[in-house]
Length: 221
Image (cartoon, rainbow, N blue to C red):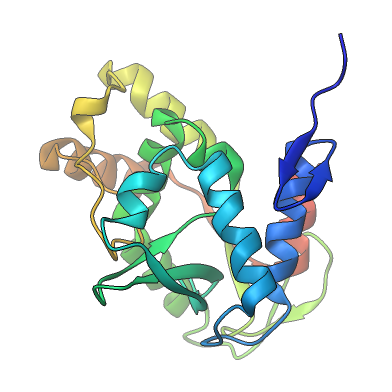
């Protein structure tokens, strides 16, 4: 069987990974709050039309006026679209997230959002009496500004899977609200379940301060 090519705006990609790499390159090629130039705009329009399962909803009835580079709730670069009717929303370029619904991924992201204040509190308390800490992974010095908070044995993924198993959570579309413009984080419709995970995480998570490089290296292993 011949290997499938992905033809997007007159560029042929041999894999989804290489197409996504092009979208990432465009996102990072200029500073935050800049609009895409004509060629990059046309490419990303074709890219979203090809891969995004909710493209018609994202595009809206009036169509897309421009695409800009913004930062999401976690201070990471992301794409932001503005329609001709002046309505705006974020849009992801990660193919595994946009070409089909991944309920586990969405649930995990919603639970990470639910415990965001626990992560922040741990970071503040860790640096309460120290301006510098040593990363346990690569032994380099880190400050509160540049550090990461790592879930260490169990990982965050392990905690989520255990919670799902213990509570017999059914990951169906009914658990998630309809997507809305400008909502840059995930959530679920069951507030009691969110609260249960909050308490579960508080009791079971083992957190530690690491360097950004150390944490990212750990995740690649």
